[in-house]
Each structure stands twice: as structure tokens, then as C-alpha cells.
Length: 210
Image 1 (tube, one colour):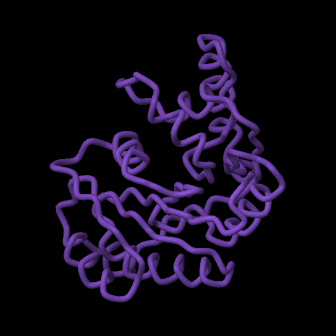
Image 2: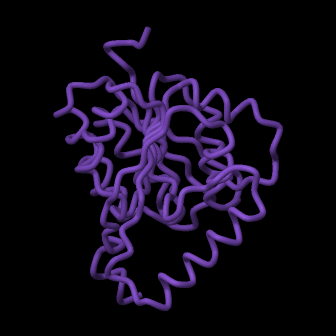
């Protein structure tokens, strides 16, 4: 039986995201409070060189936040896996800190979980991209799936809501050469994709001048 009052952990990989986090953590928290769900936010600092840690220390005072600080920059795949390895929740949301993953899609993901799905993944809408980029993407996935024993959904990234049983299955895999999209597909479970428009990476205007 599913927990009718689930606890959600949001895993947020961050590498030099100090300015984004100042806006992202309050926005994500407000959205989740509106869903009347118990939650925490786990930010995995992937060896940031800016003041990400200092910003997070300030945010800790006002938000249900945990911080996992990696010893150096290992890359997003490793940061995500480290986050999954440090959660204890009924649900896990993987989401970027730069607002490219739209927060307003989260309620749809939660409703699909309530309907029985165990992994809900975002599918990036590429309609506005050039035909060259779309063609290259299709070729990439054809080659990828031809060399794999499981189908990896096209244009599906790390923006996902995972049931605890999915998280446990991923953590129990012996794989160390991490390719998270492959691991998501490998473990199976009842899954569904939802289309979303990826937003432009959000950074403060003064950062663009650096």
C-alpha cells in the first residue's frame, strides 16, 4: 500500500549555482507547500568554486534544506547518484537549480504517481530547435538504443519523480561507470513521460557580464 501522506526529497545537483539557488530554493519551496506535501530539499554541491556553500548556509535558516558537499567536481551524473544514495523518502524529485526544469510541472508528476506510476520523467520538447540538431538527436538515440538491451526514451533527461522502490533498485545496482539515463531505463517499473518546454537557463543579468 502506498503512503497517502508521502515524504518527498528533492535532489538538486549544483555546480557554481550560488545566484540561481537564492531564487530557486524559495520558488521550489513555495510550490511544494501549495501541494500540501511534506518535503525536504537536498542540494548536492558538486565542487563549486563560487559561494554556493555560503548561500546554502543562509538558506538553511528558512527552508527544509540539507546540503551534501562533494570533495571536488565529479560531474552531474555522480552528483545525482550521490544524492540518491543519501535520501530516505517515499518520493524523490530530481531537478536542476537553473530553472530549466519547470517547477509548474511538479504537480502533474505528483498526480501521476498517485495514479500508480513509479517513475515519471520529463521529455524535452525540441520543436523550436533547428532540424540539424533534431536530426542529430534522433541519430544519437538510434545508435544508443541499438547498442543497448533496454530502450532509453528519446529526449528524456534527469528531470524525474521516482518512487522509493525505484531509488532502492538504482542504489542496489553494481554499476560504477555512471550513465543515469541508462540506469533509469534498466531498473524498469511502471513509467510514463510528460512533455515539457525547457526554459532558458536562468542567471542574474550581472553574471552575464562576467
